Length: 153
Length: 192
Image (cartoon, rainbow over all chains, first blue to last red; front, top):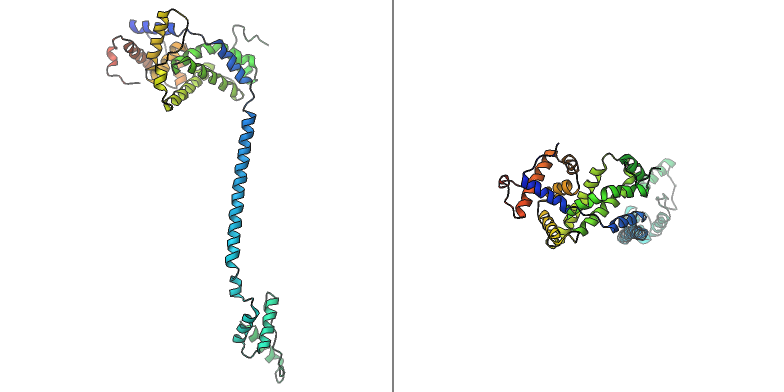
């Protein structure tokens, strides 16, 4: 676009503005700019400080996560230790009494013996009660059927 | 190697030297554009101190981005555009710090000339600071920076006609602020 013609009074103002703008930058400005670009990019001290700050932030976050995880684990361990006991009593006397409830024919000694065996292994062992008449008058098939009933909870 | 201070240096030579990180190319660019940028910065910022800071930041920014320059197509547009952004940031900082009023009352600084010339210069600069930013930018780039309307329009990302309109309206407001009668067409004209 071509430069347009201004009215006389505006052209005069334009001339005055142009005359007033005839200033030169101070010589120190050139030196200041050239000095600035000679400096290495970024302040190494500030950079190192920022890097350290970033590392500490990461470390603090990691420590917080570990603390929360540890607290939750401890809480869980302290408040759920008896769940297994409820499902599968570790107390021999309690287990023996439950065995006797299920198998009234067991003597107290036999029930304790079975309870001890159950505690010793993760799976219940099937052990026929030792009885003086065990096997007497029974066929192996009868014994097998009887053992199957023992294994039933 | 070509003498960077020789006449007739071209923008591609300067751009290539700048990209290679050669200080003499950078200094040559400063010598070419520094004075014009400084004058434009006075018009944009309103004080010599701020103008110095703005020109400094503009050239340091040019140096920092030198690696991104494959080939500088329009060095003046880049430099004046960068100066404009730096000046805008300065104005925003001043506005946040409630220093605008203090800056408006502050003289641009001593210059050369008679007392009458200095008074007139100060008066013009003060009136210029009171113009709307859009008009002040056009006047600063056109008169102080020595750009054409087309170049000014490219820097401001507006059309050349809009740049010319803003220029004329700005001059009219300036004349009114300096005690002249406002132009008849200025009565109902908003900032454009």
